Length: 339
Image (cartoon, rainbow, N blue to C red; front, side):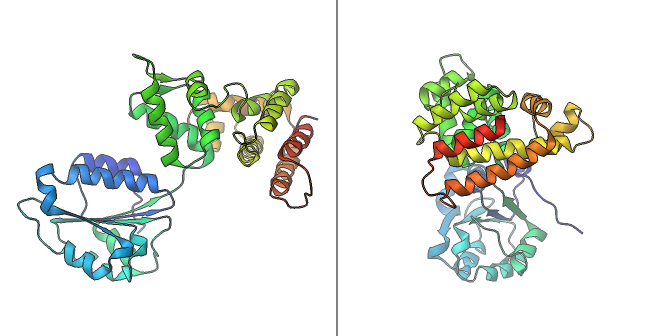
């Protein structure tokens, strides 16, 4: 029988409803979700007056499995439960020994293992032991193409809206480091004018420095519609300010667009809902550039362009490239895309 895969939203909802498991193993590449769940357990697991005697935090590099088990086996003092939290649990010596505790945990203890940046070895007994009594959550990186949707959802939960263009601008500029992204979103939320509840491209341009006219979002729009003049203006802007418009950000955006465009060609049902499902898009506004691209590019052209983008990526890293600058590489690629 397959083990249940818990989502971030499910876990958070249960914790807020005081449905807290005896053991959590929070593991994976994305530290943001791990920290969010841990903070939520701390917030909801104990009252403020109970924390002094019933909450202990260890760090993996400074502890071992025996110490953690001894703490977990203690009973709470004048409280329903105690919290034992292990941060950087991937550094615990002989971590698999915790399986002895996981096989028979105390209901009055909540043990939280923050196993960041990599997964627990599922071939060993600890993971399977925790799954039988608690929750094993794999915190995965949000793919680049889903970042705009994440931004929109995150802000919606905070009661703030964001323009689709603004969300894509942030996604392209900040990448998929959620801790960095959330800090910028918090800053923008604070900077919203009084009574305003929506983040706009103008607010981002003013406070973060991303041009609302010359960015990767606008570049994709220009390429999709084959607007040669606008596409060249954007590339020239990038060339003048490579620090804030690095080729290492632009090439993945181009690769993602043309790869998705190829998926659109080979999706039998070209209806909006079918294409959105095939591409993993959340909003129909994200589909427009693909619909325009389908009219302006042939499948074989797109297939070849994906190869050209890979070649440019290699050149940007110095492979088979003696002197071409990032600007030169992008200009050459732009010509091949538009002609």
